[in-house]
Image (cartoon, rainbow over all chains, first blue to last red; front, side, top):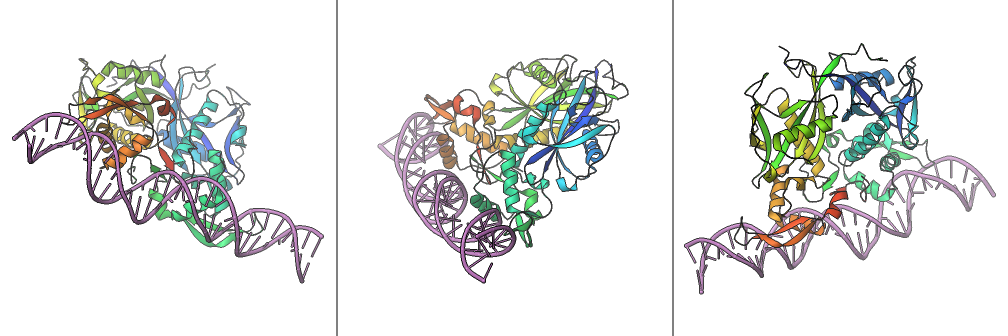
Length: 233
Length: 233
DNA sequence: AAATTAAATGTTAATTTGACATTAATTATA
DNA sequence: TATAATTAATGTCAAATTAACATTTAATTT
């Protein structure tokens, strides 16, 4: 029985905003398309959802294809589905952002695209509505990171406090008082001090920390203005 | 040129979680389907996205069809797209939640469905993955309401402080200290006291308030644990 | 007139915040 | 080899905010 016969079909795509952090600032990974339409133009990495895949599966596959990475933190952020958003046909795109440890990224060579990292403030013009997608992704990242410690997904297993501070500054485009930031972060119990120091980036060297996974899992980082406690789950 | 020819099409649907607040607790509006498949079963209100519509347009149309309301606060919360989520064909559903003033809702008579309000804790078994959608909606509502004063969309233009308190209690399933809650809310400048009192619900009567639209627009209600100020926009 | 009910406002100690200053560990340089 | 330079790490404190708790107020019911 196919009761929905008269309904018009659409194509279902996935696009990924891939965030990385290199110690300088937040970056996103873009590709230069090697195929039509919009060949040679900058674009988000994307693809079509296959019959056996959920959109999540599809996003994971696409991310792996570009970065070689699996088990990456991904989050569905929105669906873009205006009737004419694609020039060819009606394509509805489910958009995800991924937070990857940029050090684990290996440049994948492909004829279909050429990949490059762009600072968040220097994103070039992209095809279709991809610039809009990037804006939504930035907003959602800020929004989510205000309540959950997800930005740690961008860091390697060992990281320093100056690094995290820089990362937050980059995400929110603000200057932090490192003294207050450090105090709050330390008191949260979210990170554990290691014996080793990072001596690459400063004379004195900064101690490495790792995530306290116990705390990490359920951590809500914000405090509700009208509501005491942590009523969000 | 139709470069995507070989890609498999899907059907695109929209489902709405419609929240309402009647002074007792949070409720959602469900329909009993009058058509196949899954006839006579409880379901979210939904429909298919038409060729000229964006998913947002579609959600607004569907909401209007059921409630008669336009200009309603709606938010896209997720896409549900597992390959076999619908028993008939591959249908991908974009899910929205709507916050309506329950007093403005007028019962629409239709042969396609029968509508009924259900307390959030007594949602019956729904078709397909609709229960899962409701759970996601509850979570997203909590999440969003922790940062933005969106729950006021559920109240009439004039409301009392005991009403808002009850509403927050209902959304987060907690007990609030009304004294502290009231103080914080008042000091936010978000609401403006009116001369008139609501004498329906208590002997003493509670003063009505209205939203301060100036403050409302940009209000972030939470405070970031690691970040000073309101760096989210 | 007194009891009842729920709204509205008040009190306070403990905690948290934000603004600002100092000390510590290392390397570069005079 | 002493000193300057750099940046990490820790420290201080007044003001604001929180959470816990108590009282007063305005009406209705008995």
